[in-house]
Image (tube, rainbow, N blue to C red; front, side, top):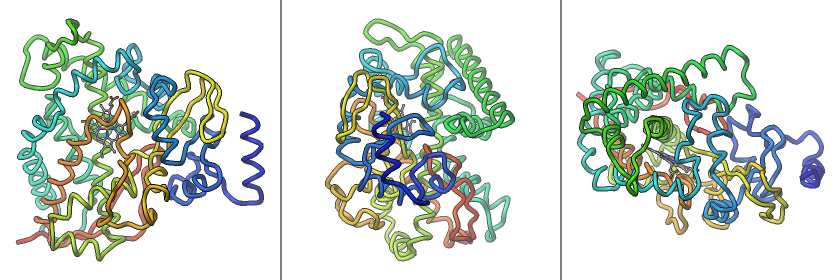
Length: 416
Ligand code: HEM
């Protein structure tokens, strides 16, 4: 490990900035740093996070598909630390076989394409209701914050419905999820911010404890009720496991799709010719979504933990190390994607994107989020004849893990 450190400081001498995920300059625009890592230092030691960052597609793919060597067990502890709302049991994203396989089988049942299709009409309704609210509040033209007034409320409303959570609580949910995910940056925060994170962690847990007890007494047609009664290989999930699974789905289903929608509008502002084409041809929306997922994905980085001493990309990695596959870097690997730094909705993608991971933990919600994004964008373009960020400057979330605009003030005009 020390050898790697020495090599790195040799490579990055002078006043040139090195890749540090916690550096605000890196968080604002990580892509030039990823490109440099892919070229010069593809498996690199990151002192601020005490972890190895992995930048090239092949290495990311290899490690994600080898769950035995690169365990997921430290994912949640690495991400949330002591702010995990349910520390008693790991969520499935932070489990290895055989426990992971059991839970995944159960959760898959609720997320197969046939189940998601049932939700399509509801997603258009949710999008239309949110736009009605925006028009009621701001009139038929003017300005509003697309990130907070639309993107942040839309996926949380959809996932709340799937889980069986009252829609009225959705704004609180969004705050809880944002705060809990902010725990990834806990090393950089002072006591006040950490107290907010703890408060949200306590509240989300208390909420799902109450909901579990209500549904156990009186099951409804929702996912929590299904989890309570479902059996996996003759065994039921415990109360605490159902609560952890529900919180995982809430966290997984909220911030990610929210950020995908916000970033899509940012990229459309940056590429007006694409915006004009997509508005004239809404059938291009799925291709637009795929390119945003590749080019500027909502989840930049995930976490693994080595179970043995190993070597990756020529670098020795000791047993017990934290390894961070840089998904967003892999998506711009020049050996897999032609002209990777170019935003091109017509590109033919020959290799799977890394945006939803790979291997056994491949995102459970990938189909749902793509469907949600499509319904939302179709509705937004249909209802607003003008929808444009007012500034070229983007205030990105303060996170190296999640990427999306924190605020996105837009100029709008609704169709009459
Ligand atoms: C654009 C939207 C989304 C992105 C970019 C995204 C990204 C990811 C990634 C990268 C992983 C892999 C984690 C790993 O390998 O350790 C993952 C897993 C997961 N995602 Fe998503 N996600 C999105 C939407 C959703 C939605 C809508 C849901 C649920 C409603 C969801 C639920 C999950 C769950 C439960 C896992 C863990 C699966 C497992 O451990 O087997 N995601 N997601």
